[in-house]
Length: 218
Image (cartoon, rainbow, N blue to C red; front, side, top):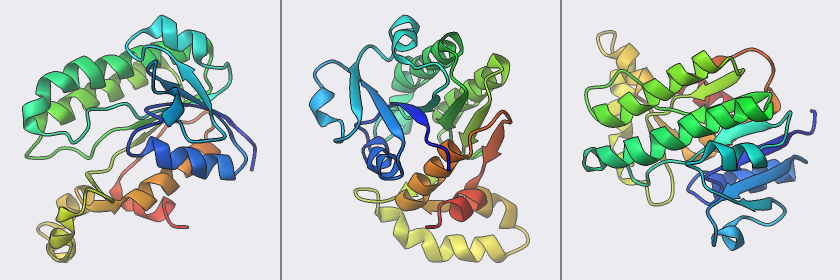
């Protein structure tokens, strides 16, 4: 395994604060880009860099050349009521980070998108589809990870849906949609993100729910 320089946005968030220790333990060098005043919330053994995630100039000045960029910024606890935040935070931060990564000479970009198509959360999905298009247009080698719902601390109510999801995944009429929109665990996401960093090369790939479950195994 080659040691990587990893630049993470959203490093103090739900996934970021768990991903950083996992990567550090495996010997990677981490720079966590956070808003000013949040430096103390960055997990230990990572370098905290304060800046503006909505500014490509601020990001480009901080992203090391040749690094793997992992973009985890997003609206907490997304719901249909937060459509405006998806546009002003989720989309703008991703757009600026992609542009900055290209300017800085990053070698790979990892983006957490969402499984689609889906009958709900259209504004949330729409933003992520547009970001995926920006990544394709950028020419930066990238990994797009598409979970549907991530089970973990504070996100446990969907556990009651697990038996139904299993049943739908084995019935021929509902199998494809149920597998695409299946539930994954936070541990599986951290494992998949770690794999994405450690296997980052010049090709681009999309990781859907079945592969998240496979790549996220210890």
